[in-house]
Image (tube, rainbow, N blue to C red):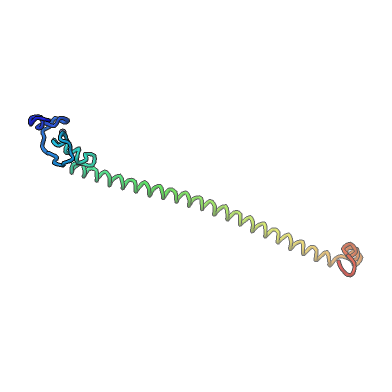
Length: 144
Ligand SMILES: [Zn+2]
């Protein structure tokens, strides 16, 4: 049992006893609390002074604002990259379509020329030549 004198000073912090825990389940040696004992009991990790709290709020807001700016810049950069890729794709697709168009145009021109040539050849061919060609293609019973 502690004497009255011992109880006036906390053994852990060597500070003056200012509060007494009257909870029945609290052991006798833990009932006598100095201000530090009290703060430990209240949960010192989640306690802060008003000024400290104000400073933390200011820092938190500033950090959140900076993060927001960074996040926006990052997203804008991403969209710019995608936009640039789309532009490149557009140029590439346009080139491909141009080539396709040009190829088709060439083919049409060649076929038209061939058609004109064969028309003029047909006109110019003799009956004997036509007979020879028909004989070559003839499969019998008026099929050629
Ligand atoms: Zn104490």
